[in-house]
Image: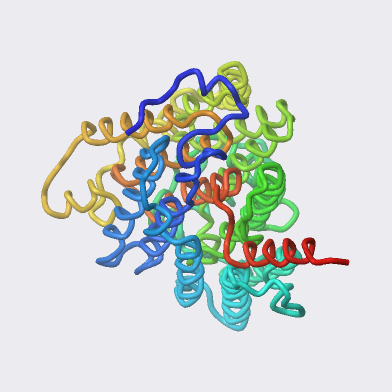
Length: 485
């Protein structure tokens, strides 16, 4: 690997390695796209429980590590090996095939079929948008041209939003503890109850989830953000659906700002990946809270790149006050020159002030639920992680391998800490490494680093001349300008 130049990181407008704007041999999105596709296929295969799930996730993890680890190197022949269109074609194929992976579990009836139809349409249109964007046919008009243009963004968002609403209606009472603890804690918050002292049903006998019954394993920010949706719409999942839409919109804004400024061609459908990834409606049905975190991080990056420092501090603080493992991103954010240690500490302070009332009111309850519960989780043999597979074989690893892996991940994040794309890539590496080496990782946990990879691509993009359609358009324009009038 090439030596990292520390001085370069002090300039927020400079990027490095595979994200360098001036590197003819770098700039391919191939490794990150390969990593995204492999992880997406892995978590969707058997809902993350099939025999191919972990091998695919490990391939994706390795691709991301290589992509970020090769920062600053120049690989001869990289263009010939990857091809400018190949990573995007692969991405479109994963989206097109992934629409068939739509587990329902707790959904049924006509609304489930409506959700399926809308979700399949959104996924196929996103895949088609990417493929048409690559086509060397700049003179195309009509539906094909519309599909590959930014105009297709909002209709596809509308389709996926309608699919999400339909799924929520089709599964009004999913038998998963996350849904019940969020619903009851949000209602309790409005009544002045302490979520760390509540139970999620009157008795164990009437509790349909058979999992966490009187434990709130998150930080209060999760319920604070979702409580208005419980009050107004009777279901916290509407808030999670809105958070996914906010993520897509923020990534689009990041792509428009950074991509246009650098003159980088990107498929307009790129931000839609956070809505159309395989199994997206499954994640919404289960009430998993990762969309809140993806929204916070995407808004953080948008705020930093648009010069809204206070918004950035608030967005990161909300993430820190919502889920414990987001604290792992504090060093990455502090090392990002455009955000820096001062804003990172401010976010930590705001998050701590948000959490403090629950600590003061019930310190032992908070410590037992939010800290000891997570630390005390055993290694599950069905976990989509290395420790889970080893535990199935009767092997216990302890914390040592994770510590080593996270050290490597932080080192990679430190090396490429210059810009917004590098921050997202570094954060993605850290959280993906955590998931791979954690004692309990499942479908939902991987969706956060996947969103970070999409945001990294949106902020950095394809540092090359562009896809065939763009190149053909440029040739046509050049010939037109050279023709005699």
